[in-house]
Image (cartoon, rainbow, N blue to C red):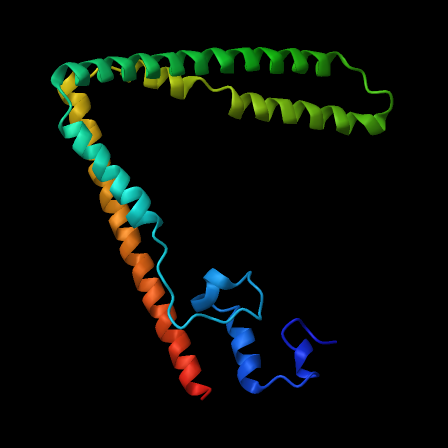
Length: 200
């Protein structure tokens, strides 16, 4: 039975056409893998511009705005961030406590339930284990409570420095990813050019 790659051999496709069709499935052509086999593989692969155009430019503009930000605005942003984090932590603790209460009520119902036959005892055990595991992993407020005790309000200067460092890290990350993307496109281009030359 022919595969999607071999189906047209019966119709007389050439070795070159078959090789180029199969090339669609290799790493160099990953960006066009889902496209029609009839679509010609490009002579040159272009790098994805997401990191360069979108992220690097956006982060650099944010860094410029941050560095130009007046001290009073930095103080306000630091205050907003503190209260936002404080609200999130308190809300998370409360949410987990409410969920824990619901799990405990369900555990109580499970314990009160009398299985109708001995064959149902395994079901009761399984139900208990499921709720106990969920209680253990879904309702631990320790992390949020620890974060709450460590939370402190930053000065505007501290906030600005933290944001500057984060943006510079983001820029470095996207520059590195952009470089890797350009190298990938270059290697893909070289791979397909070598394949075409070998099929000439």
